[in-house]
Image (cartoon, rainbow, N blue to C red; front, top):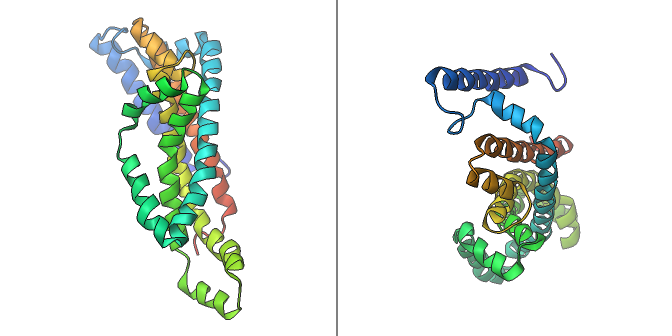
Length: 250
């Protein structure tokens, strides 16, 4: 087998199907009520029935995640470079971000909603906060992993600091940066959903909260599956760029 369907894909699909069958018939044979734990068939049926609402709310959450992630990258990368090259920033800015990272984000969510309201801004900030720190750490690690012998080679060629940065350090940091993005993207989804839980009129988080509050368990599970699928699609969308970093193995 070749292409996207290979042995690993078949094993993963088989494992998921086995779990689905175990869940389906386990619920049926045990007599668990569907309002407590609906079988996968009921959840899939709800996904189809509520596909319009789930799709529209998924687009809202996707917008929040995308812009929160973009801002996290746009700010995280230059801040990481500043921390790496500036001893003063390493002693001041870096400990500050570590301290901020230790604050539970769900504790900040109500304050952010109070400050920014129920609109896009508060959810965007939550997605940003969840994604920001992994990008900084990954970029710092990538910059620090520049091979020493290549640094000596660039110095021997009398490359300017700017040439060494763009032609050596940036390529050397890209694999780690991309790994950080793969960690940060699902976290951005979590951040947006948490923000929707705390205060929102739209989004998958709001849909989950509304469905669970009204006892609509199948819709709750359907929305959770939508969140999972969204996270997976975004993760593999970032992972796609791995193929262009051909020097990773080196």
